[in-house]
Length: 291
Ligand code: ADP
Ligand code: ZN
Image 1: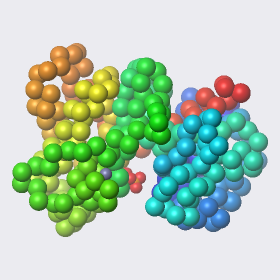
Image 2: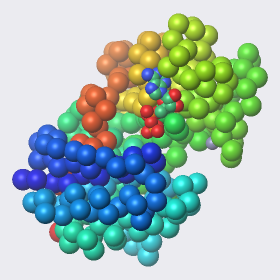
Image 3: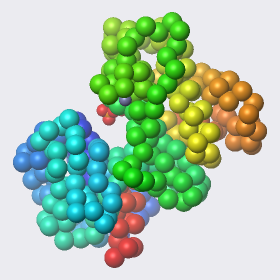
């Protein structure tokens, strides 16, 4: 059985055909410019493929409320040509098949919980630390949506005493994204994150902020596994630092078997950067079941 998957990102749109085991059979990508330019080749790609449903994991903010008049639309975004764009409506009209829809990070969470590092768990957390910081939450066996959808990248953190950086977020300055996303690292240290390998102070500070946020999230959501993805997390030296500092932040308050085995609790993505597109396959499978 074949399913279509669209990982709609701010810089590129990845289109793929997958099967019910999550295997990706083929894929292609198109740069994200304007809907007029970007969408026609995507529609052409999926037309004529024998797909039963399409899953879209989309950059946000998006309207996920199926009761809403603007369900499936992209909402207020700095990517102005996409503001108000009815991505679900356009694909449904073009393909006449069931469409599953969620945020990009919930897509990655779903991929990981279905086929990856959180397989079989009922509660898990996926966080990407890249151009921004975003999180997908799986809670009691479901992706969490809520009022809009969680925006955990914007939680406020306590800046380190030796960090005079004012923070990159235009809304909050020193929120998690403002302190720890790739552009903040580059701004604070004067070079792209990937060129700062070997500068221990960079990764000490980075892991401090990520650990502070994770401790807050552990206390709030009680996830059974935390998966960290995105460009910045390619710096694998961050993992042991983050694990140690999460335990320091919790300061012995929680005693669980997961925290006792923290090397298997806070982990990289199990699907090696395919979690988003595989999650979109699962969104398609879920949409088909509903119909
Ligand atoms: P996006 O968030 O746009 O989907 P990425 O997850 O690749 O894309 O994140 C891009 C950000 O991650 C950039 O700020 C870049 O500096 C940073 N980044 C990419 N690769 C690495 C790397 N190997 N090490 C550290 N930072 C990286
Ligand atoms: Zn913010």
